[in-house]
Image (spheres, helix red, strand yellow):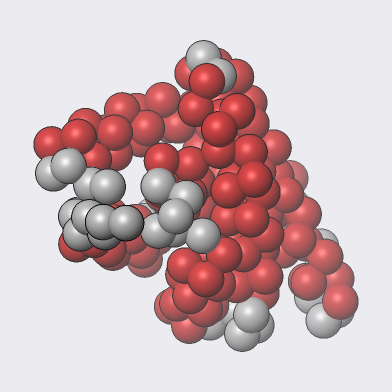
Length: 162
């Protein structure tokens, strides 16, 4: 049995760092409700493209970082991103075969699962019910998925991430 060294760990890490930076990028007040779930989109891509490297642990760690950066209840995003990573890992072979429009619909469902878990946690701690704009980021993330997938796929191929 020969072990081949894994390559491209820095590419994966930097893509998550860029996603987290886009999450905290200052936006005008009217645009904040439309901010895509960058970190979730990157997590879905890497859990689909490289499930042996990016999985539930990376989802949990990313969620904790998101919780600290946004000041939300510690573990709120960790729970949802762990579940998203688990579902994506379980479906990664099917997702790879889907055409881009079916992948986008699957990404929409995954982003909605994250928002539903967030809504559930908000209700558990008696936070007020958000407006309908709460549901805008999954729709925007779905529209951005084809471009995010192409960019990350090209990075993965260019730097030979295994």
